[in-house]
Image (cartoon, helix red, strand yellow):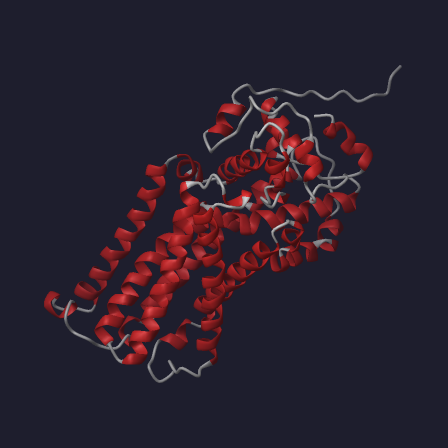
Length: 390
């Protein structure tokens, strides 16, 4: 009698259509030659993509696709699309799958709408911006009691907006962080702890905790991509953004009074360093997308353009606030700060919560979970052989 284990695999014929709602996924050109997988320097004995991810989608294997970490371990280098003999665009297929997975992880359902509809995307950014404008008017006219004529013409210091501005900033920063962290349980259940999976000892998670930190900080796998300059721009952008968010989260009180708001204050210099990092990183992205010479900048999605523009405008408006405040132009400084908040708030609440920023959590998390699987013995070359057959 055979001791072989029988696995029941259910095919969902609607999966391919669902994935295609999030972008391009070419099924007619690809004939599964495997060149894409062979060309990728990030493929290991345990992690094989993009061929396996594409096969999951083509065969309607919704469960294995939702449980796969490989789409996030892909760093969008583009080697697979360059070498593809049929020009099937496997890089774009992987990007589409990541957008699909982002929507599946989000328990609110908002990501699904934003990533499928340009109207929802622009509408959400515009709606949040209009809410901020309304709050600015309500605060000055109702809470402060400022006459409308003085609201548009009276210059005064910025101390009046604290501590309310502190509470507003904390809400705008912590709400997206909460939404991102709240999805970790769902991702874990789909990829690590679902039905039929062998339980993994807690000690394996503890032992590999440093993996998450290391990849979050270094983005080291991106250095394997052929375009070396891409890693530097990406790392500086990420480091500058995290540093700026940290300053806003813990050092906003230094912004409150003119006596503390000094050019030589350490918080000022940290902010300047973060701004320089952001400008370099976002500049390299915008220039790359305009030139479209590299594979990973081709086939630009609409959100791929809006997000860097919003981040650039946030940085530039923040710089304008500082210059105008130092120069003593109180009224102009107020308007610049209002514009800064109007731009930054929808970028944080919409983009950070439901858009492209989510990969800053998902990618190192996938690498961490993959390392936990390897440590626990759930990843071996022999066990992966069945997966390669796909």
